[in-house]
Amino acid sequence: MKYAKTALAITAATLVYGCSSAEKRMVNEDPYIWLESLESQDAKAWVERHNKLTRAKLEGDPRFLPLKNEIKKILAAKDRVAMPSQRGRLIRNFWQDERHVRGVWRETTFEEYVKPAPKWKILLDVDALNKAEKKSFVFSGANCLAPDYKRCLVRLSDGGKDKAIMREFDTVTRKFVTGGFELPEAKSSYDWIDRETVFLLMDTGPDSLTSSGYPRQVRIWRRGQPFKDAKLVFEGEKTDVAVSAYRNLGTATKNSFVARYPNFFESEGYWYKDGKLIRIPIPTTAGIIGDTDEFLIFTLRFDWMVRGTTFPAGAVLSLPLTSVKDQTEPYEPEGLQAIFAPSEKLAFSGLSITKSYLYLTVLNDVNGEIYRIERKAGGWERAKLPFPAGGMPAITDAPTDSDRFFATFESFGVPTSLYVGEGPKAHETLKLLKQLPPRFDA
Image (cartoon, rainbow, N blue to C red):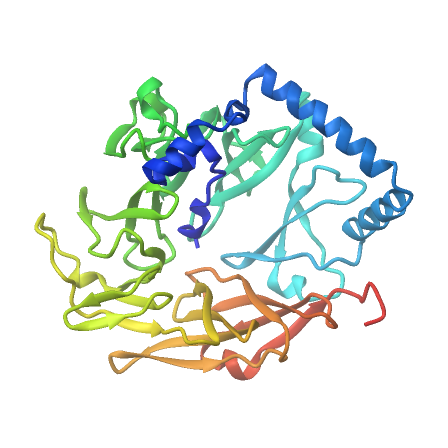
């Protein structure tokens, strides 16, 4: 989910804003706090000096070179499973090997993908791009516009830096769009609103960033408009870690949400509806993990009593969007329901949302289990998916505009295995598609 993808590279200096006074004093007295200045020449020299010492120590060990060669061989093996990313009727994948060191972004059909050796069409060859532009770009993902996924906002990081550029890409012509959406190198983020408009979080001037160096403004940016002129719709505090904005184009209602993060452990969420920001009435310590046409799904870090019912820490709850009111006075929302409640042995691990179902991953005595969750008769009904026991299953791709999902399973004795499931019978028809060959005698 995109909510989960708001994970940030937060440094010790950033975490100061979520600390107590005593903890702040400890950080302020830290003799190495100067290393947090990432662009400082002194800090860079210190890092390089210690990297050199570390490399000498590691490379001097006789086990180093054989292990390095073995790891490289595994990472570049031709029999790896090409992990799928479903976009409409197509499957996309990013692939690296000896010939494509920086990788190729490619696509094929589902019918072709399930074959032992599928044929791929290359969309973007990053090595060729680097050669043409004399750059060292690293492909950092593509945000593609539903429902046809033909236009994508491609993120490219020069040398793998935290900062990156963005360019609009046409997957039909397989070229960057002339005069399309484009951003210079920055710690930026963005999400499609429609073909002509995107949410934009970008450095637009000295006062537009948080103390952590991330954008604190959410703007609506229209095609052909200078990004600095994009309309401001939300602004976090300068002391916040960051803000975020998201529109779920995979659902019928296409809901939009905005949030600010005062520190690493709290968030303040808003439903952006009809040009207005409506505060979501859940604790700031709760974590939003998804949404459907009708519900917002979130987890609790602490116990929460609402209308006489106590929901425990670690629970996953659903909040009807109809109970989110446009009012400034605090209120307790109606219609909250528990999708999952933890126990001594059960813990929430992850959530994926398809067109018609939720897929809940839990840990049961540290073994993974996945349940299909369906809305029925005013409640949530679940069915366990038949993965092998004693390992770790994980949903790896579950687009919100389809009921097909992909999942992996692995254990100490079973190599990474790719499964596909689809529709109301997914718990009965889960199918093994591909499997990594064993790398050792289990």
